[in-house]
Image 1 (cartoon, rainbow, N blue to C red):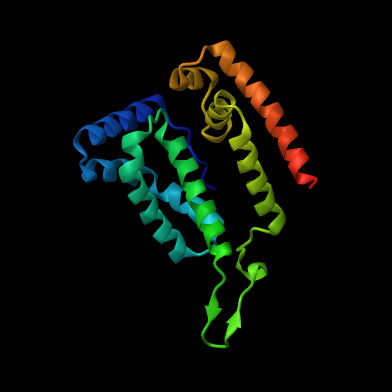
Image 2 (image 1 turned 45 degrees about the vertical axis):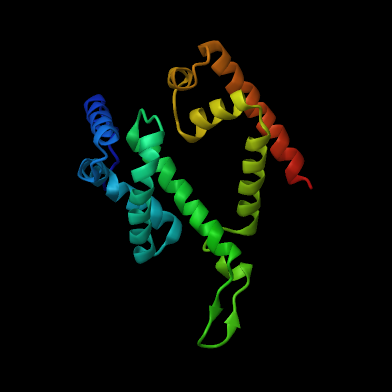
Amino acid sequence: MKFIKNTSKAEVQDDLALIARYRQSGDLEVLGVLYNRYMHLVFGVCFNYFKDEEQSKDAVMQIFEELVTKLKVHQVQNFKSWLHVLSRNHCLMALRKSSKNPTVSLEDNFVENDDFVHLDIDDAKEQQLTVMEKCMEALPEEQRKSVDLFYLQEKCYKEVADITGYDMLKVKSYIQNGKRNLKICIEKNSEQ
């Protein structure tokens, strides 16, 4: 049985050096070297969502294409974690998009409805995700940024403070209040 190893400080530093080289030069070969280290993990995330090898391979390539632009604008401190979040979000968006576009089978003129298109995501989970996204958008900016970085991008308090420029005590307060407000909003909107 294989276990995923933790990223060492040397690997993180090496990743950051490659990111800096890519941002400076725009050289896709440099980005390719970096991405190649984690491509198997990206495939695993995609396969976990899609349950289809070909669709997962396509997603791996689409995520690389996203990296070409996103890595130039986002300040990434831990590439492996950031890439995991990016991959997961890509898959969720693809699943959501496919669920909104019912397909027509030419073989038997059968029109699929939403019940058949969800690909292992049931309506309740989809609704919860939608409610959570709306509630995140409703949070004050400081809370939204702090909660997003801490929970979704898995940054520590210090990293959140460094990225946002907020005082460490403020970061803790924003995360605590944001989490509480998010919970209240989700509960309120789930009852409707």
